[in-house]
Amino acid sequence: MSNRIEWAKHSPEAYKAMVGLEMALGKSGLETSLLELIRLRASQINGCAYCVNMHANDARKAGETEARLQTLSVWEETAYFTPRERAALAWTESLTHLPELRAPEQQYHALLEHFSEAEVANLTLAIATINAWNRFGVGFAMIPG
Image 1: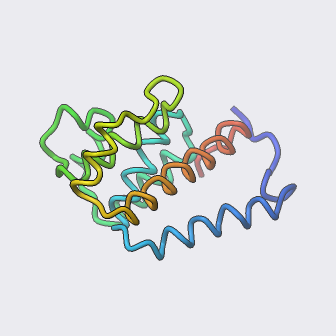
Image 2: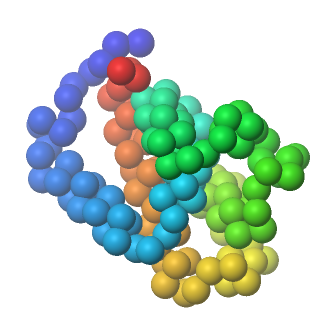
Image 3: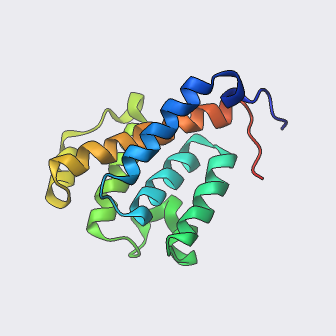
C-alpha cells in the first residue's frame, strides 16, 4: 500500500482542528492509558495500520503492559481490564460500529456507573476523534513509520 496525498498539507485548517480536539482531550482529565486503549481499539476495528502502530507505541509509553495490548482485540475474554475500562471499551466498539450497534442504552448506563457525565462526553469525543483520524489514515493509505 502506498501513501496517497498528504491530507494535512492540503487541508491545514482541518488538521489544525483535529489537533485542537486532541488538545481538548489532553485537558479532559481522562487517564492517558485509557485514551490510548480507546484509540487503539477503534483503530483495530477500522483497520488503520498507521494508527494501530502509533497508539500501541503510545500506550506502551503510558505504561500499558504487553499482555493488555496483545489481548485488547479480545478484551471481553480476559480479566486484564477493569470494569471502568470495560465500559469504555464497550462504548468504543458501539460507537465505532454505530450503524450496526446503535449505542445501546445499557452500555450508556454502564458508563454512568464508572464515569461522570463530563467524562462520558469526553470519552465520546475521544471515540469520535479517533474514528475521524482513522478515516484519514485508511482513506489516504497512511503507512506506519
